[in-house]
Each structure stands twice: as C-alpha cells, then as structure tokens.
Length: 206
Image (tube, rainbow, N blue to C red; front, side, top):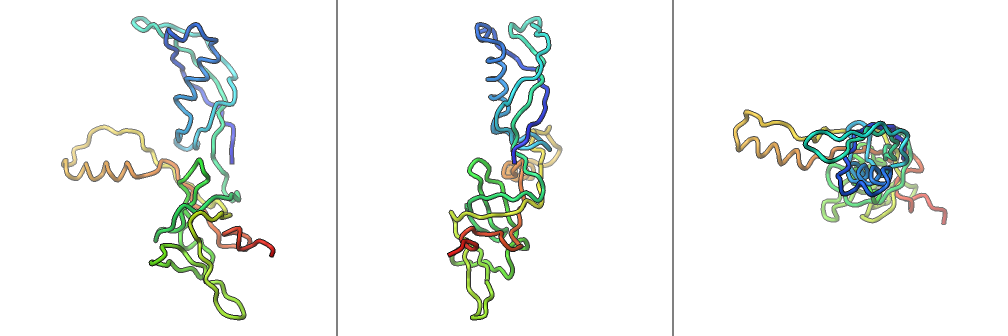
C-alpha cells in the first residue's frame, strides 16, 4: 500500500531559515510542498522518509535564498493492482460504492464489480447484494460506515495541473473549469465480486 519513491528536487530556503540545520529546513520545505499532494503517475505523497544526497547550495543574484538540489526518498500511497485493502463505506450512488481509507477517499467500486446479483435501493440510497440461499434471497445492505474489504483492480491518474487560456467561448470554458475542479487527480477502482470480499460482517463466523 505504501512505497518508497526516489525523487529529486531543488529546494529554496529563505534567509530567515539559515540559522536552522540545513537538513531540518529542507525536510520542512519538502513536506510543505509534497505532503498530502498527488504526484501524477506516482501516487499520494505522505511524508519524507530520508534525504539521500545534498548537492551544493547556490544563492542567485537578486534572491537572498539558497537553492539546493536534493535527492530524497518519499513515502507514497500507491497500492499495487490486486492488493486487498479494508476501508469504510462513505456513501453509495448509481456510480457504485464510494470507499474511504481515512486519509484517502477517492475509491470507487462500480456496480459491475459488486457481489452479484446487486441492485441499487433508491429509497435508502444504498447498494444491496441479493444473496441467494436455499430459503430464498436475502438482502444484504452496504450501509454507510460499514467496513469493506476490496481488491484493487485499476487506477486512474488525471493531470489537474493548470493549463493556459483556451480559445473557447467564456460560457463553455467556465463549465469546463467546473468539471475539471471536481475531477480527482488520483482514483482507485475496486472490486468485491469474489468470495471473502465485501462487508466484513458478511464473512464473520458467528
């Protein structure tokens, strides 16, 4: 679920930080810049693990800050495909079941990846597994707040970095901007369509 990623960046340390140890100042700046941010095709950055190499620091004309090229390793949330994770249901919609890990919310289990047969209860706004038994079908509800075990089957990265102005008409462009704001930069697609996956309460031994 968590991996160490080697990165390189040039860190700017302002003059009022010069009295601190260089490593401490660099650590703070890197965490300010990266912590809780999604890096395209890398994952969700959590925190700095260690600094592996510091190159020479430079002060450029007109800027009193120091600039240091830093090689470091960062802890990143990036689960591998087919990894089994346990999260909490934060809601359901026609798109599927939305799951949260507490620190990461952009997880979706689409309808075709649920235990089948499944139906969406419009009144309760929850997905239901129509579990077949010898006595007939039992409705197992996927309620908000329930713990759910799922398999990671896909991931989607969207480049949400700012783009230049376009030649589209203002009314159209504002609509496009609103759509882009709602898009998550990193989304995980899960599946529970196999034995042992789904709500933990379904598989507990009584």
